[in-house]
Image (cartoon, rainbow, N blue to C red; front, side, top):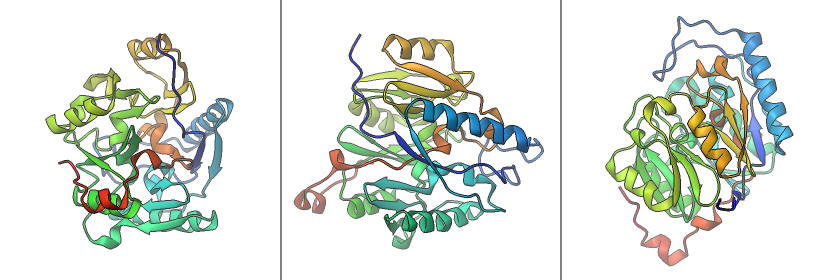
Length: 294
């Protein structure tokens, strides 16, 4: 068994308690306006998730949910944190854009400076589409993030960006098909990406746990890793859990099925605040001539 080399981030999160969670509209294939949400059940599941994260060693900070913004519970999408700097999401859909303004205020109160990716006028960028892994910032190009924003992220953050074209409509964010586990391992769902995306991820992840489409539809790639503990949604495939345990990870499951009705799971509800993109940092000369893979 290869020793776990823990990720240097993932122990401090921003979350939003679902005080106003419901499904009022459909902006992804999982949302059904005719499927009623049980508000109390959603709150109980969310509270259990927070307790599980804290018991695994994470710190959780909270932002208040705005009435009329039911998707605000999916905090991962507010922005990409790099130390004291946040690249703010430019949401694809109008229904979520007020969340970015609320998050920008919260970040400012927390002493973080912000960059509005949308000010560049190059399209949508949603932070659920971005992960640091190895020496690159992996960023999806697909339903929620436009490839033109990759050059903006590279320039504003000074990092190497590796593009992963997402082509599966139900796995619309990268965090539904990619879950970093440690410095050499990740859960990956290649069915979400085109051939170029599969090659990009294959080159960066030495030891992947490959899942198929059916397994990805359990939201098992939308998990959170705290050291050697993987916090996963209930219903994780047995094969996946056993592989993780054989590598030395502990698997903690939480029923968040009520929150799945909005198209997100555990990772979607947790924005890591302790990420630094130093491993992907470019020198000034390299940044000037950096190419962003298609």
